[in-house]
Length: 83
Image 1 (cartoon, rainbow, N blue to C red):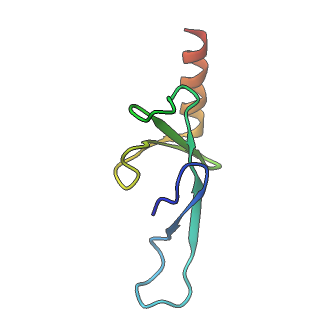
Image 2 (spheres, rainbow, N blue to C red; image 1 turned 30 degrees about the vertical axis):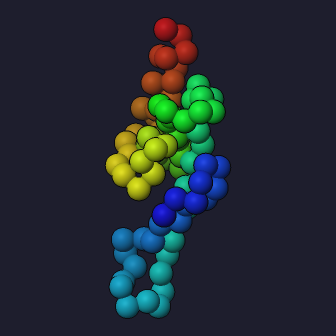
Image 3 (spheres, one colour; image 1 turned 120 degrees about the horizontal axis):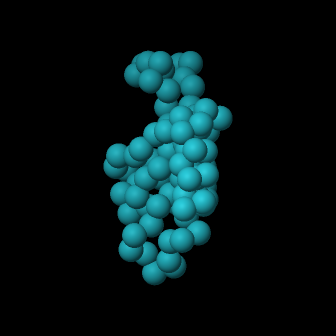
């Protein structure tokens, strides 16, 4: 699914059938954290959608991700920048 950092990653909607025909796809634009180094290692990527924020390990693009409501992410970022 992943096309690389900074490129759209398309996902088929769970409401689309397996027979083809009318399908809906959505995309996420993953962005690498500015705190991640250029040599690899521990990297975090974030994709912002209108109501949710998705977070994943850039080394495991096909693996699990965390999903937060946008309001919770805003509260976290506010706390982290003031800590």
